[in-house]
Image (tube, rainbow, N blue to C red; front, side):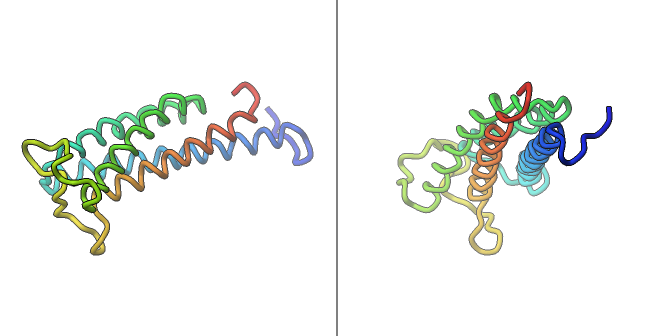
Length: 158
């Protein structure tokens, strides 16, 4: 197939598809880095995850697989499956951050046994905690997925 010239209508479709693919790739990179980071903290550093961390993992770990399949076949409709997971993960991460900051009392925690969800012993740069990293990753992924959904509606056959 010949590549369309800049003035051709097919050129804008191809450019829009390239932008959507790039956003999907960035989303996959974020989800993969978050998954690997979570595994690094628990498997290499020996940090036992609390109950809320496990819930966040439940929503993060499938994302690299779902987004990766969407990348390989370039199917922006994978957002349908990834967005609900990312939104749910954002909710758990926000709850975890609010619990850590003391906005939500510790008696309202899901952690009854094992590691306390309110105690965070890892802080990067003096203020960045693991729950905050998780929240940032989920918010970024949700934002990218919404952008992918909006941009992919303009694509033909999307």
